Length: 395
Image 1 (cartoon, rainbow, N blue to C red):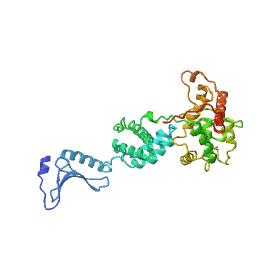
Image 2 (cartoon, helix red, strand yellow):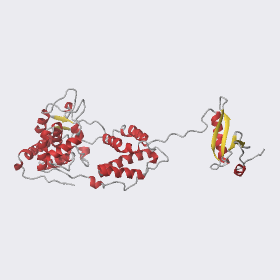
Image 3 (cartoon, rainbow, N blue to C red):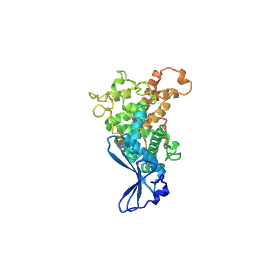
């Protein structure tokens, strides 16, 4: 018997009328199986702990050299004799959906991100349907570009850029947890410049009047729109306004529910016009919200209601946040000091004022909102008395 066997020796083995196995003289249990057709493959044979004979195919001769085959055969024999599978099954690769689920639990939910609701909506509507079942590392730059193209065509450049931001965040997070992953996103993939996303839209007097009048027939949504303008607070805070946070004198103590949320106006005494609006709102048993929806939740369906309001008022090309910008501009027009106006909206004061000035400005903010409401009433009900018009700035 030969004492050694090389690749050339394996190639020289001749087929026979029946399949046979030629033993490797350098490794007991390692064989070269030769078919009558001439096809050859390396195999290993041994017994498991129960004594059962196990044959393991190592691979075809034309793809694997004998030295590599011996190494694989040794490992297969060792694993089989230890009662393990002859070949170690590679760990299942993470899908994009797997990584997203982990990211949601470890980052999105744990850190209480303000935009969690919108991020989840984009994930469920656009990103996961496209890539959820794909292996995470298989999503390349061209895949991202294709998805952004589709979203831009169907939903606009702004939504496409938001999806890019979410995707980049997930990929960068995954890269911090893996040694061999590099995110495929590069600069220049945005669909519009950051400056293009900055809105300057405010409503002029005629638009304020038409929107306010159209709110008469809009029920809860109409009241919500009016409260947004009268309070100058963010949509999320007004939407979740709860009866328990408003006292008998009309003081609204805006709660802070997360350390990461944006600042707000704090404690505000609502003007008479806003208090009258609240007095007309129904209080639903078991529902804590002023702008109540079904069950125990706040109102919803805002996209459809916004479209209805646009049709009823004839005012288009605006978003709800424009009311906050309009309210801030009206405060200046009503003669409110800039620093008081900013504190009313809840904007953080610059410089040392934010550190050393601990005054609550409750009375000043009360006066500011009263002046704002008075100006809105003049615009809506007595436009001829409004001498200085509010210019409209559009994108």
